[in-house]
Image (tube, rainbow, N blue to C red):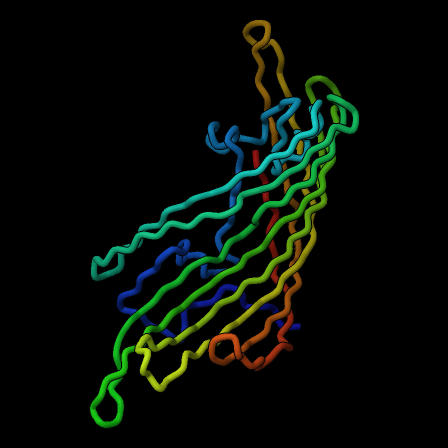
Length: 279
């Protein structure tokens, strides 16, 4: 099976000046998209260091060992708003704002303060961009036709995890989770003609890749209690997500608006995600 060439160059269009609006970064074009790091208000307040927050009512999606301390059933959700400013070689500047759902998590104590179970959803990667160029083309008879060429991308991978965390001692907790990665990434080349009286129709060429795979995460926390004085403590934590192979299928379509013909569907392959360590 041929390996999917997911790291693609921007071919077919060469834009001396491009703009984006209400989308994310154009760098999400490459590979599987930009890695999506969704946190909580607690972890963000600590600069993203949410792996070591031990609490009876808090659990982070990135470290399954945090479920061990649960004493209450907990549901959490987060969202994200991100702004992007881009400047091209002609000093033209474009500003866009994009947002969306961060993560969802439901955590239940199976044995209060000793054993906990957590089910979570969070975006893993995100593809969300649009680069456009406007111009005119000369037709027979000397008339000109306005057009707009677009390179667009949307989709990404989603992660669903089921984890279990247990307390070995007052100082040590460990945990593990099973993680499923699924999603669709679509790259679209679209040419439109804004003139309402134009005899040309919009043409769309799309490349859609469906991906799925499974991996696992193991994590641990270790707390040093009563360091300088009673009640003071230091918690060290880490988590490792195992490398995995994603399986995918790709389809090519061509047409106008929603009436697109499938050109090919036989291109299947794999993509590899490396080991990830967090501390």
